[in-house]
Length: 173
Image 1 (tube, rainbow, N blue to C red):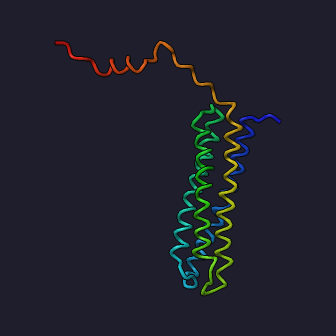
Image 2 (tube, rainbow, N blue to C red; image 1 turned 180 degrees about the horizontal axis):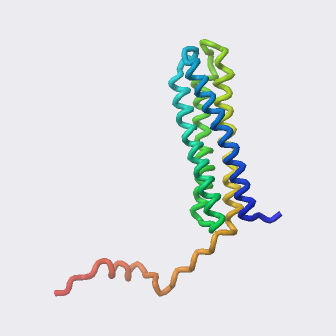
Image 3 (cartoon, rainbow, N blue to C red; image 1 turned 180 degrees about the vertical axis):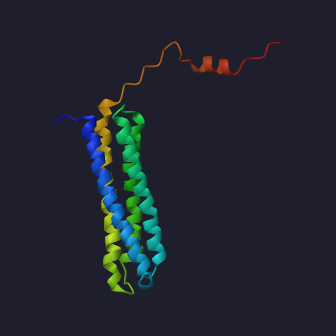
């Protein structure tokens, strides 16, 4: 089935819906951490982790909304670049997930009853980051719809010597 802009917009809508579900979960986890922070060894680290990912995912939702609206008018190279940048950033941020697991989960906890909550926080963010890798596919599917860049006018390009002479005029005596 050939890709259409509409099918890519549907794909972005699915990523957006997934992200909204994740945001709801993360906000709920944050409320639980707030309520039970006395049982955590390092509640500050958990809050920092959540407070990093909640706005980051909100930004991706906004980007998906913006791109979905704009590509229906015209697909631009900047749309593809943004989708690819989000996917690349998500790959990098998976290290943050590993650090969180090492710092807050993969160790003896003062209250083992908190391990499932911490694990849910980690798995939810990791899974959402993985889902955002699909934005690379969306970018690839939009690629054929980017208008070709006009060829530079050969008369308008200057060689190094011409450019240098134009920029630095030799003073006349």
